[in-house]
Image (cartoon, rainbow, N blue to C red):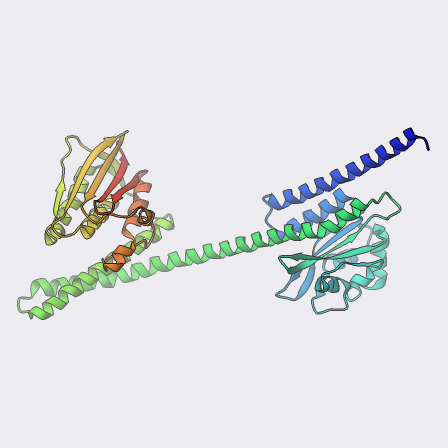
Length: 441
């Protein structure tokens, strides 16, 4: 053979090899696309992978079985053939696609491959399914699709068996280079990882659906419990008020006990109301009765309500007037709840003889309502916890400051429903400033 003929032959081989390697890369990309697609049903994912392997790698057939540990069964999830088996008896087709192999059938070659974590090879389909399909039926399927041999690979992910992959390759009398066998040897590992990711996603998705169901049940329970608790607690509060205010002959000690009971009942009613509000917010059922509201008048109402509490702690509370009307679009009751929470918090954490100031500014078509206190301040690492549900700070827990950690969470949700925001600035030892921003009208 002259040199030019030799070079031409080598080029032909290299081009053929390059073509086959490109097919390998195309197949691996295709498997990635299937896994990363929006298809989440594991049956469909496995079916598409099996079809892609046969189409891109030019194999005779691919069977992908997955292990159902709960039922101790190996079942086909993806079967793809290079030729149609429409001419085969329909009953035989159904039998082929509904094969179930017992995990305890150690004589089965597929089970042996998985348990021993090694590849097996056979020339007879009957050797794979002899406990399920008779020899004549297996031979008919094998002849129809022209399958000469079968490679049985275990599918293993994270040291755990997840199934098996059976490949019927092309005959070796066709161009069958080492890299083609290398592709077949690599496929089980690639497909194991792909299927493991898909199975994990499927489990996570089902777990999330279950969590959503439980979350809905929780909301329904909280809503029902809150409704059922609020009525008797309101009755208890009313009777305690009547005893305390209509009786002139109460023993001082008994009066003291009843006052404590009244205060705790009020606290419980507030907690129940907060739970009901949270349930409505998170279930997107909180209704806003929108109206045009003068924000200054609304805050002044909260200020007047809480002045008594400030006087009890000898705290100076100041509401600075604003020369213009501060009109916003909002639910008067819900916004009042926001400012009662914020001003109430400022009074709660401000020490005796401290001060709380409330004042307004207008910034970029938004009204900024600020509540400033001379309390202990909040460290930077604790600031993100303020608006979390049940997000009470360690300092408050250690000082046994009463509270549930729900007020600021609810306030933030209500303000955001009004297309506003809440900002907090604080420095340890120098107090805290809460600012509520609401759009002007």
